[in-house]
Length: 460
Image (cartoon, rainbow, N blue to C red; front, side, top):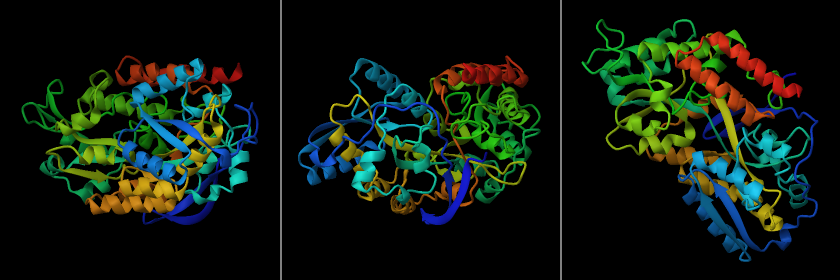
């Protein structure tokens, strides 16, 4: 069954967006009770709110201050952890009974939270309070409906993937912005995209990757960076834009699929191509980037290009001494680009002792009043179109053209992050399997065995 239904176009960030809605799949268990007893008119006390993005914290603090002004009996306390620490702390806090009332949730995580009865379904309270779930960019609200047909989050933002590039290094290599935007890719020889990557790679002697005498053991500038790891079985910023351009899909249906397709030749050839880039010296190895900071490595002039997400726009443009540009991902074998379309939401922990105030805060976070504030901050693209337009305007005022990010949505060339049960176990299987291929320790065909292990999780 297709997971997508076309909806009318809406305007987001100054471009026409072809909406994508998701069909609901019913089945599975329920989570932490329901919200029928929640009454936001009785909201008082303190709400503990956790998020992971330090760049967004100031905007959400402004939302919290505005919220307190309108609701003086409620105070929001914001705690921010780094991505690497966030999920460990969330998991441990849920187990110990000390979790936050409200937290920023992720599509790759919330299925396991539902399974463990750790989230509050929001349907009753948002219906009672008249929250319009149709106000968001089409497709985002539906992502947060579980297999049981209940809603576990209200959308806060969306993101896509593009190429950040060092303008000086690219121009020194003889490439223009228009040429980068016209690059084509295929998993067989990499197309004009690999040719650009090779040419933009430079060794310690100044020899380019496509020139005689290139020394792949002494690379000064990689044509393409690698974002901190192999990407495992998701590869959002590492390889998903390539596999997506082949027509490959993670699962039989998304969301809530029960059969993964890591045995598909299109996926395996994509990972094989990545391994070839590393072997040729055009991209750093997994070992080289693990534990590092790809943005800072780019800022040190070590990468000519790197694929990354819209949430990192400001991080790249804040780099000192680096002239940054943004290019779209390359077109694939079918002549189209591809990007993962991800969206975050705010959820309520089932163990919260203050669900009335928690729900009122979640509804405010999901309102135009807050999302327009976040949009004006120019960090991410909020889920409500007016907020996304504010973000685009703010970026434009800084001289940053974000079209490569918004165009993927406008052109309908996006696909979803895999949403299914067993996400943590799948990561435990696929991360070392993909690592081994990229490091040249295993053939891409070995991913078939890993796929069998993944699919076996759904037969237990």
